[in-house]
Image (cartoon, rainbow, N blue to C red; front, top):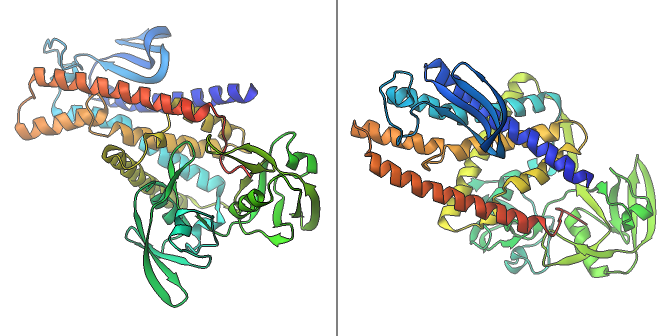
Length: 449
């Protein structure tokens, strides 16, 4: 129950902050351009509390799923009085600046937060920077069916030459049940293969079934699990299973499915000491896929990480690079959603965000929550720039069309488009929340060995 309250508190703070920043962007530019702001609200629906200052009612409303700034004459269906303080009385350029200010604030916040994190505590998995050399292949996976072997190196995927694991992984995640052509180097041979990544986990992300070399390091240990009873601790490095060297958590998971409930012996490195943990009996438990169970020891694995700090210039440069990369991935995900090439389950709503925020809030230090906040802020900024009426991107699209036409779009057309867009967004929200519930009910965790 404490995890539930932590998740609720964390998501309230994170989303509340995101909404505040976004709406403040609209508010600040509107005020600067002398547009009258009637309401500044965190949340929708009934007003719960707030205060009035000047022309503006600052409020917190009952439905905490967003927020809004209400400007005089903003709605195209509102009666226009010609008051110079009304939104529609201002030039298209002014309205464009007001519309784009909210998403811009979210994107700038994402850049600022990542820059701060990188200056204080830059931590990332070591294997991500390494060339995409396959260390192992799961049985009956897409990679196995394509004939790929340990030692093969992916030298090209989706136009990216000599990709690292960081570059390869998103291409696979976004290609669930879709053919993905790769170029492989095996010794002196170079050849092409087409794989079809399987949709795995409740989010239906693509999995090729290959894995890199990434030492098995114990993260969170579950209470009353075989790992806890044996005395495994966080940061223990498991180097062998029944005497066989382990190169990744995936290799360990594969091994446990072969031994099933039979006792296994672990060799562990703890504080430069080599320890033996004999006779751990795996238990059948939940996985990322609610339809499947597997034999587990009861801990969450984490990757070997490199930790450093960066000077401001390097931190800012890396933040810009990472935000650009994630922005392109968000747009590619949106494109594939429209094309029906990826599952809508890849999109998380408020419940999924709450789970992630709660998990990040329980990690050591404040940087995990800041990184998550940066990611949510970037997603919010990019999503609001999509050319969907009602969203900021839709307002901008109408302004561009009207600028090219040199006249306003018909009020009747605008009304119909906005009504259709509203229905679409409501249905989209229902779908996202439904998917969240389906993913949440099993109570699953990722990378559970």
